[in-house]
Length: 195
Image 1 (spheres, rainbow, N blue to C red):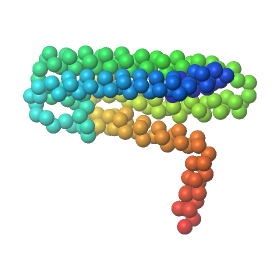
Image 2 (image 1 turned 90 degrees about the vertical axis):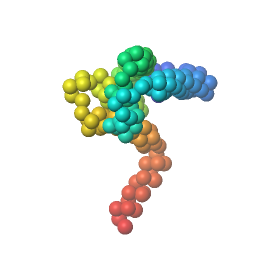
Image 3 (image 1 turned 90 degrees about the horizontal axis):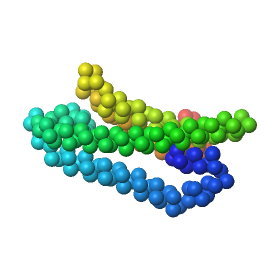
Image 4 (image 1 turned 135 degrees about the vertical axis):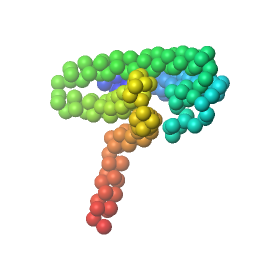
């Protein structure tokens, strides 16, 4: 999404060639492929962990840090931790790409002479940036917080924030830019309020 916004705002005349169907397919394949590979590696490593403290996890899904707390094998634990480091490096690379894109977008938007043009450009970027920021900040807190401030309820709330809220909010945010959807939603609210 950040590349799409970068191409639309910073290189509007080249948008069609930069974000064509082939480029979109390649970006989607790269995202899905790397996500699938990451998931397979974590799943196989997690299933190979011997659990010596039972198999009950204090979360609503089987999250890696919670599963590692149950492990009794030091070597398997280190394999999973090293895999987490690799995943963190990949995520950091994505984060840097997003940040570089948004710095370029910010520079381009600040050069737009009209207030209305700047507002329109920011309104297309800010929802994506808000969702990405929520996801990254909560996941960093979940995985990098010191164990001294860890509690089951805090861990549950943070994992809920990064696993449920961004995917649920994303379609709502992007669909609210659609004028037809806004008009239908207004009609629905008026019908509900005045009946």
